[in-house]
Each structure stands twice: as structure tokens, then as C-alpha cells.
Image (cartoon, rainbow, N blue to C red):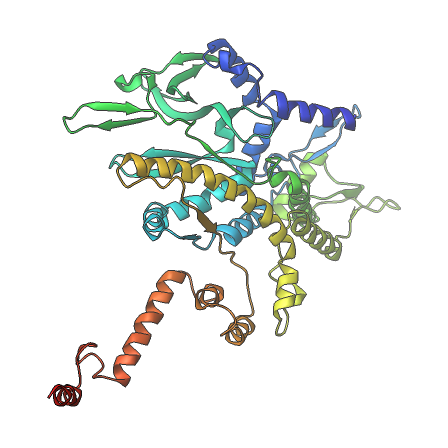
Length: 508
């Protein structure tokens, strides 16, 4: 069975996402309808959606019901027992850890062409970095997310991201490195008359432009809402005469951002552990609430008609009437189950440690941080998340090659020049706790061995290396002027008066 599931998994990855001969069928409406229908309810997409739901604290425990064995021996629902739904969202904490560890700090751009770097910094400003961090969370939740290059209403070149469950990609290769075309499925709120309804919209991105549809009952209908053509160019600009001019990118305008090479969501690694934490905490509260008024009671010679009346009297008055008939003594006894809180505490702690290890995060309350930890202790605590971040960073570096392709095309099309051959390095500044005193001492000890730029780049207080070097040069210049206020009083080529006199005497 396991072997079959593994083979099915490989087949899904190859056949559902890469289609042989799809080039000739990409405009086949029936083909798209069939593939969208299968993809909408596929286990892969359901897991992607569940990743986002778990991040928003919509866990499976919410739908859990209390059950018991009924008269017929089958499991039946019980609605008169405590049924708490406690959520301790360690998964969301893990996602935030990873996203902020790699993308929480602004990334740096390094290259030889200062003009090109300056233009890139204008495009990859604070808004882009915020968007990239949010996209990083979507990458962890879905295993993959997508960046879409476009021009906003003000004509600014920018990017937005789509979560993985909105995009059905059709790849050219099984390695998932090059797109043939892609389908985006998303829902909007609309109205049919006065009745509010959910409308499913579909956008198909290919080299011919963007094609818009409405998905109604599994059928694709061209979307002509708002008076807009269902088929349009990727980019529409207004020329000097006020006419709309359309352009298409020479690539499909979607850039994949992957968590790992298999595009596996983080939730797949830790879902059972997160569900276990929720179940243990919920069961503990359920057991604590099952007191003498709603637990199992043993009646002896009860002075009443039925058990329903007994429960009602107990809940209303906190007392019951019993009979004493000669030798037959009445009374009420309870069958109590002792709730050992230490057992629950131990299990929850085991689950929390396991979710950190399996999710490759770190524990900020780790014993290695007690006292005065050194840099080796800190690096040891961060080792797992650092290894996982290496995989994610390698995927992001590959994605930035595509991001820069669209950026270079924008710069060339807007008259800034052709920078397609320029080398640029994207440096992600990981947000790792560090022993700053040790790092600064090591930097001091390396003065004269390493360049000033390398030392400044390693300093824990520096965010922008170029800006910091500029400030250092300004301060050094000011210090020199203070030490010698007359150094600029005379031109460098001005001669000494006595030397001029001596030269005159020699001529005489």
C-alpha cells in the first residue's frame, strides 16, 4: 500500500503539472475545464488550503465531536458532555519564525554597476520587502507561491503575490523550472439581482496575453464583466496621443517561489503533532469540567421517577432525595476518574519539542540560552532552522533570476538602459540572535587583515553597507579638517613665495 501511494504521488507530480503535448491544447476549453475540475479537489491543493487555515487558527479540532459506543455497538455523537476546542497554534509560531528568520531583515544588493544597483533599490523598496516577507509565509503554508509582475494604476512597476492554491501551473519540464502557461482560480463576491453570491473567476496566463473566464458549474465562460475584453495583453500603456497600446512579456508573467525542491508545505511535516497538542489540551479541560454534576453517578434507592428528573434536580438545586427503607439505604456515589495533570503536561511538552524538531525551528526558551550563552551555543540552537533556510534561500536565489529578468526588461523598455548582462548578488540578512560583543571583538581583531567594506558588512549594527561607508568617509574628512583647518586655504599647486624669489635670483 505504501509503495502504491508513493508511486501515485510521483505520478501526480509528473502528470498533473506537466502535460506532454500541452502546447497544442492550451486553448482547448474542455481540456482546461477538466484539469481545473480535478485540481480543485486534489489532495495537493487541499493541503495548501489547510496550511493557510492552520496559520489562521482554523484547525481540525474545531470540528471534533464527543462520541460514545451506542446501543447498537456503533459510535454515536454525544452532545451532553463538555467538548472544548483548545488551539495552541505552534504551527503559526513556526511559520513566523522561519519567515522572519530569512526575510525579516531587508536584503542587500551587491554589484559593480552602482547605477544599476541604485535603480534596483528603487524598485525593491520597503513595500517590496514587506510583500516578499508575506509571500514567504505563503510559501511555507502552500509549499509554493507566485510573484506577478505588473504596472499599478499610477504606472509604477511592481509585484504582487498569489498563494499556491490559486495557481495551477503547466510546466515544460518535470523539474518545474519553466512555465508553459498557468491558470489562476480565485473567488470574488458578486450579486445576482439583490442576492449576494460567490463568483469563481479564472485567468489563463500564456505568451499571447491574459485570458479571463468565469467558472460556472465547471464550465468556462468568457468574462466580459465591466466591458473589458476577455482576452488582453499582459501590459496596457497609454501613448503620448492618449491611445492604449498593449504589450506582452516574452515569458509567462509568473515567478514561482518554492519552499523546497518538492514544493512540500510545512504543515505536512507537523500537522499530526499540532493536532495532538490541541487534542491533549482539549481533553484535559473536558476531564476537568466533568465534575459531580455531569459525571457518572451511582444511585441507591432513589426517591424519584427517572434519571432525567434526577439530573435536573441535581443541576437546579445541587441536591437529590433518596429513600431509606429499613435495611435498604439510599445514597449517591460517583465513579470518578482521577485526572493527573502531570501526564498531560508531559505529553504536551513532548509534542512541542517534536514539532520544533520536525518543523526545523528553534526554541527561544532552550536551556542553551541560560546564563550567558556564547556564540557556539546560539549557533547550535539555530542549526536546524539554518539548514532549512539554506534550502529555501537556494530556491529564492533561483527565483530572483526570473524577478531580475522582468525588472531588466522594465528598465530597458522605460529608457534606463540595458542591464541584462550585469551581475548582481542578492544577500539575505538572516535574523539570528548573536553574541554581539564576540562578533565586534572579532571585527576589531581583523582590522588590517580584511578590507573595511568586509568588516563593516559583518558588523551586527549595520543594515546598509554602502551608506555606512559613506558616513565613515564623511566623518574622516571632517576629522581631518578639524586637525588642519588651513589645509584647504591654499591651492595645492600654489608656490611658496620664497621659492619664487630664489628662482628669480637664479635667473638673474
